[in-house]
Length: 400
Ligand SMILES: *Cc1c(COP(=O)(O)O)cnc(C)c1O
Image (cartoon, rainbow, N blue to C red; front, side):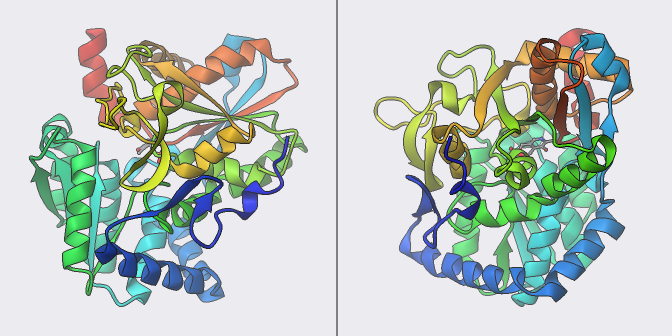
């Protein structure tokens, strides 16, 4: 297993092996190069890191607990399961880690306006939140279908002072919202920063978002060494664009004894149009600025995707994950809608924790694997978010 190169990527052009890069129109080249330059500068500035640490602690609620899920563990009868409680953060998910990093960067770059895309609305809410707190104007692009499905988050964003723009093109979901956000960025580049919400898109976003999310893994590593005196045997995280997963995995990449599993959305099963498991039905392609695994047909048309969890419902995966899969450093699997729902209820009823449906995919993989492991082995599951946003949907599906 060759793992040694991975932590040093991407290269200067944003490549993770054959993946990543910068596939954008000429008009976006300059803003991306500028962003990369400024990010590189400030990421080496101790004052920047100090300020970010301050807001992560005082505003977002870090460090999050690494919680030993005792009843969940004994109900499965295998490895000891710890939950990294990103669900306890302000706004309810890991997304705030990245938004705080990017708003501080935008401030130092002299920007006064933030824009973002959002699917389920979680990233939109996190962006609207930091915009309010730092006094930025804020516009969030959201597919018109998603606006209807996630009306509560639309209200939250508007209450926080953000403008929410419903996008009526194409499927009226996340992919179209990203296109609109890029269009806005090109037009308003002088005063606007584009807060991309996951470890995806053109360089430097996959690298920058990973680095803002690695706080999850840095903390978890320290915490498990304190609690157990050794490293975990297995890390599990759900993979949408891939930011919560790479945030947990990255600080452990050099620890060869630590295995890692990324869980994609299996939806209603691995049939075209019914899932969002890019590593099951996908192939090499370019979508929205980067080269990675994409769900597409033989003509390169992007396939429809489906998942019970909006946050995992996207046709492409972050380029670093594609690379880690090629290297056999991370194993990628999937959980179906039904498995995620079962995991959702099981965690709620054994631990009193209602997870986000996205995170429930990671919980489902733990349910499958823990019983096959020894009781002295250790699993860390990234609980990327809380399930408040999902209770209505789950109630409707399970007929509560
Ligand atoms: C957005 C979201 C995800 C998926 O995004 P990643 O970038 O893959 O982490 C997962 N969990 C929750 C709770 C989310 O809000």
